[in-house]
Amino acid sequence: GENVEQHPSTLSVQEGDSAVIKCTYSDSASNYFPWYKQELGKGPQLIIDIRSNVGEKKDQRIAVTLNKTAKHFSLHITETQPEDSAVYFCAAAISGAGSYQLTFGKGTKLSVIP
Amino acid sequence: GAVVSQHPSRVICKSGTSVKIECRSLDFQATTMFWYRQFPKQSLMLMATSNEGSKATYEQGVEKDKFLINHASLTLSTLTVTSAHPEDSSFYICSASRTFGHTEAFFGQGTRLTVV
Image: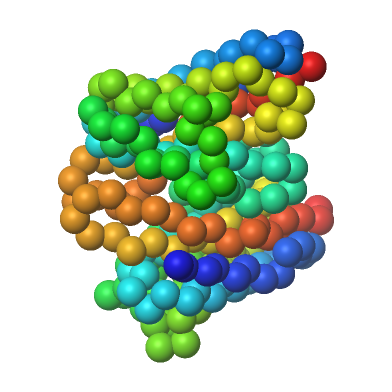
């Protein structure tokens, strides 16, 4: 089955700096890669996703890059703010007709220091 | 759009009793719903996949008789923890995906279950 590795497990940055979280996946058939933000005591919230036919996607301060050959994808947060502090999870799935299952990384706890 | 509501957000129950957790898709029809369990400071562990109108598919190691899942409509799935024990205490989260051809999964806010 799919295996998703996520690094680092914890990350501290100064407010205004950039944060980068990296994930690798094992199944070359995976074609959907979402990123989730989870605040304490809440469910994960989808913040951005990318599909295998795209190399990069950006939404304001958040961007995701995908390298299919190397089977890794990364989340980039620029101009970090204290409210960005949370646990971030990457995931991978094989999407197509019908249902699919997400395989999650172990999470990265991001702390943005004011 | 794409709001998933989970209820209750917190529940405390006595050992031996059963607890039902509801997961509703408020503004879309969800053919498939997923139930996860999350231990403190850990990732989400998939427990089961639930398709509307059919039996749930459980992951290896998850007791289907203990964690009863019902997905009777396109907007509601329930997880019942039967004969709960303290080791069942955890954060349970559901997610829902739209019908055929969509891949985005939207999560509920989670339920903190404490068994005393």
